[in-house]
Length: 597
Image (cartoon, rainbow, N blue to C red; front, side):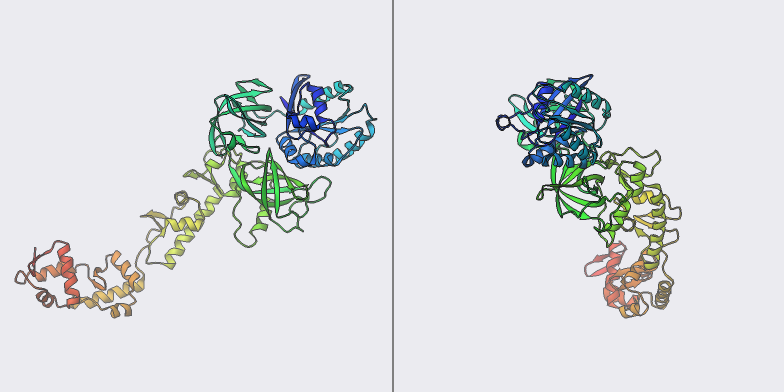
């Protein structure tokens, strides 16, 4: 099946032409037929040559331009209609602006009502306008929907057009933009849309608005089918989905294969007839598929400095609602207040980096200057440096080559991994120099210093650093962790002071004079050079054994006072020392005294 969208000014005979071609009534609503104009999307189909052609009949009135864009958005070609007795009109131009912005590049021009006026003037005028757009020089046919004149020639051109359109990938991920949603008694919610790629079958599990849904039934061209492959107009009966939870602009998706993009970097292309992109307002409407979403604009470069030679411009859009987008998608930017198409856009990145530093926006514009949005795994991995494996499909990327460094569900660019390894060596050395009392860089600190999204990636970097090891959650060089020379000298002085009085712990002022503060003493105790008996009480490591030997010579049980005199120390030291001996099972309390075990 090939799907075309009509385009053209209101009341130029688009619906009449479709009725003449298909024998079907595209104006679905009584109000449309009463008013003689299309106010919502209509659909009809026919066989032309060896092709099945389906038409999306879009409204031509300016008040229904949003509905028109919803119909044109997912369709690859157009049947552009101009009336011979009216010629080129305002909505003709607006429709052409939309087609140009969306990059539609093929179709056929049809001049209707040729029985009312000679059509050549209207045809030539329309061809001049079309030549200024992405459509270029289209074949033109003059017809009369009333008399049938020219319809055979039109069918021949439509057959040729269908043959020119590229075949879609039937194995691609499904993204069906919903353009209608309604209920059928006994069946439930039904959504319709143009399936541009992939395949849908009865029983498929899909995703809609973040929730899992299943396909209960499927129709294409008004008949039930078990499956439908792109390109196709389909109606999908969904199981267990209330109608109020579905609306135009939603999308049926292959589960787990699309990313909801709320912030996107895009290249905005000049509108038809303009040499460059003008200054964009701060708020715009973005039309993609059948969706229309408000967005906030942040330029990535100065307005007087276009980013590329074709005068396009890169900007960052923050969407009011996230959309399932991929790099390379085309969309349209519109100013709803001025009723003007501001240009088309190509999505470049659906997971852009944050812009935190001064000059980051301009640097980002430079990065994107050579990107065309075409998905390329090697390019994206090199640009992002670290890429979540689960995001590959959502970015439209294939798996990287076998052997690409990976850990914890992340891929790392090999060149970036080598840079990270050098950086880790520097971080560990800097930590050792700045804090010699704290051997080894904590893994969490390494993760922050390397700007990695997951601490498990540090192990991947560490594997590239033969001179580093990990011990107890810290990364260090072999030999790191020894006490600094100044601390060793201070400890030696303390040990010398304790040589003649092993239980007379140095006072706080003496420790301070030697430069032994809390952190230094903690490192000394951890290294086993001194024993911490209690706060502010430090003795040699063998002090408990020597104390037991002295206390064993006393009459048992003995008092604290007797212990103090025997040990040659003060009560400040004797009491916590006896408590330590009791805790370690070397002595025990007996009444008001102590006994060596």
